[in-house]
Amino acid sequence: MKFNLLTVLVIAFFVSCKSDPNKQIDEGKITENIYHSEEIGWTMEIPKGWKVTHRSELLKRTEKGLNAINETAGSDYNASELKQLLNFQNDRAHIFQSTSEPFELEYDGEWEENNAGLKELIYEIYSTRDIKIDTSSSKEIIDNIEFHVFHIKMYGPDGKVMLHQDMYGKLINGYDFGVNLNYINDKEKNEMMNAWKSSKFD
Image 1 (cartoon, rainbow, N blue to C red):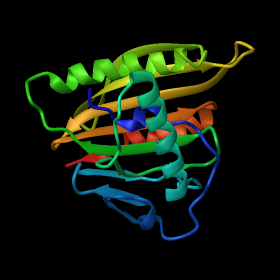
Image 2: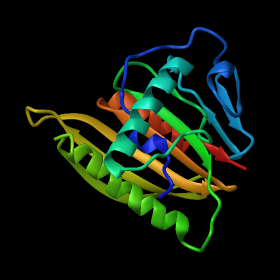
Image 3: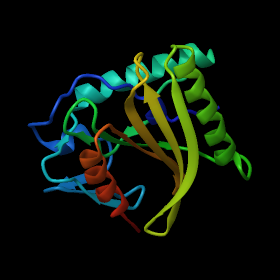
């Protein structure tokens, strides 16, 4: 199975970027508050008041996600080809993340099959750590591009919802393109979602 680490990134401590935001990304360019990826053909505006996530924070999340994948799946996957695209947040719980990774199709339907397997893996990762979740799947159109969406509702020990995760995935231009929105409050959710759904694709 091919993994996109975006699907298992773990919330860590908040680190805002006070330096050049373009030094925090692997591909694309941020001009003022507009991000554009040449490889994906994707343009998105960063919501006002949100900060680009520092690369050191992204490295921490990637390491945790990689450890979770390999421990649960019994694999030895590495993230050498994973690219950090636009990542921003305003606190520990409200985070926008996006990545890309080359995905060379070997047969028709391979990406969809892999995506279904990732959903099962995500559920297993949480379950083996005694984290209660509810999940559902849907498809959404953003600028005429259809994305597969995996919705996760995570509960704390007291039974209250402690986090929502909406994971968008699509094979674009030979890349496994993933976008993840973590949120609790409606205000922050709407700010991220409105920005994301206003994205433009070439």
